[in-house]
Image (cartoon, rainbow, N blue to C red; front, side):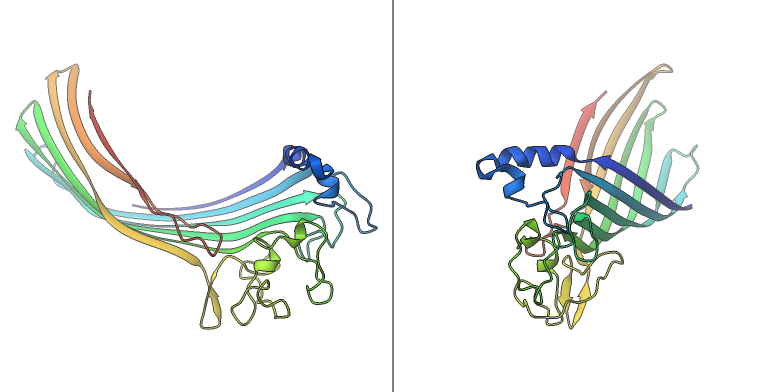
Length: 281
């Protein structure tokens, strides 16, 4: 069995609550007006209310090969192989109407913050399950699933950077963030712009972004940040058909959630999570 999905989602949402919360947080410094300095190109303070223009382009290519023995046999077997590849082109554009170019993400006037990333998730598995009818009413089932995952993420997230005098001008607003955005983009030496302020930025790996700050620099090239892992899950099940209308069963099984990627390059990926389930019903 095989399937292919191609899905596009476009969205627009209000983000005023963000501005309200931070205006209150920085009340002692005069609120947002004296902290983020939301100004237009003429230097006038503007309404800091934000809105989000977003989109996702999903694809999913999924395939499974499965074989099964006849269902009427006392011993029954199901087994097979599984492969799936999913992608997500992520665009989240946090805009402030009238925002000046110096405060905006570089090359995107009006954008205070941009997320422009491509995510790829790959999953592989081999599985097998064996059932045995101890009596016509009592069936024991046991199964194993060996899995492997390989997930990656690359792109840009964050604020812009005042490009004056080769990016060396001290920004007067959040565009000067040293943790995210253009200031953390990779230069041709493999250093970030923060550590090589006069360096040359590498081009954006994901179209639509100003540069790349979510990646791994190796041998002069940028590669996606990735994580991978493997393991085995299991299921043991006992069914008792007490009457044609009543079934009792007991199950012990283990599941997992793949590990994932923290977009900050200095923070390692997070591990997979597992869950063991036991129930009688």
